[in-house]
Length: 394
Image 1 (cartoon, rainbow, N blue to C red):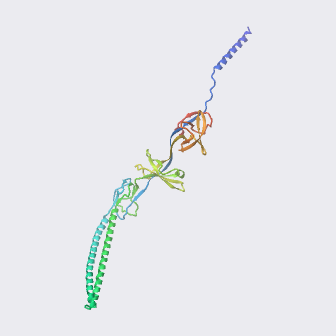
Image 2: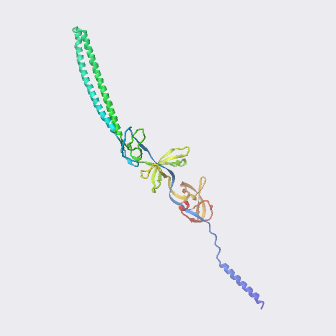
Image 3: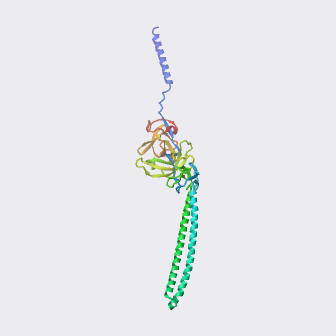
């Protein structure tokens, strides 16, 4: 009876061991660990534009100062004000001409007097010519008679003296006409001067444009040396005058497109680079660039403006700048192929600072590590997690 208990215990132990072995054989095998997750972006083909941002002040391309050309006349009427757009030849102001009209009336009488003096001088020529002809004829008759002794020598001398006197009077009459003509010409010149002065009393715009400022005041005495009365922006052309560093200056050229934004406005204004200064300031190391803008009521001389100058445009494979590792002259991206990192050399095109064009070495649609050179190396196994390029730029 005591012998059967150990035997029973051995049987039970064997059954327990067999059940445990069966359970172990039925348990699943342990899963292998997943490779680390890495953020990737798709290489996309699209247009990329490189720009340079400049700031500056709106200024007239060319200003025209309009002032009085005569002195001592009072401003009688003002026909233009600041902000007006005027055409070439438009009347801006008128000056009083009462004194000029009085001088012209006086000049009229002087012209009439000069005409009378000229007529009198011309009549004296006719009289002197007649007297000379008579004296010459008398001398011609007397000479033969004097030679024959019919008349005395004293009579001949009288005839010679009379002929000489009439010739002198004729020459004097001609000189009198010349003097009268000169007096009349001087009087007419004075009249033309007065008429010109009267025409200058009407102040007109020498060019079409925008009136920037008006210093003229009603009742003020105009002076040719007193400065301008009006300042006009020629052809209403306002442009952006900006300063840029000398390194940026070398990338700018005439004709480049510029998008200009103004304070308080939403719609930008499109312009073009008109002038890139050849001079760089020795102290500030800055150069000037002028951006031509189309006429607009939004443009106000003296206000601040910001411009984005397009210096390059291309269409190609574009990646975020963070996806490229640059070491000296060599640039590399980390491509994910079948879950494995592959470091690949590339050639860079346009670089905007946030994005870069891949000119060679990468195909559209390939997955590239978004933050290259940070956690993974060539040959590492990874689990790619795709993200958008905009998320990388942020």
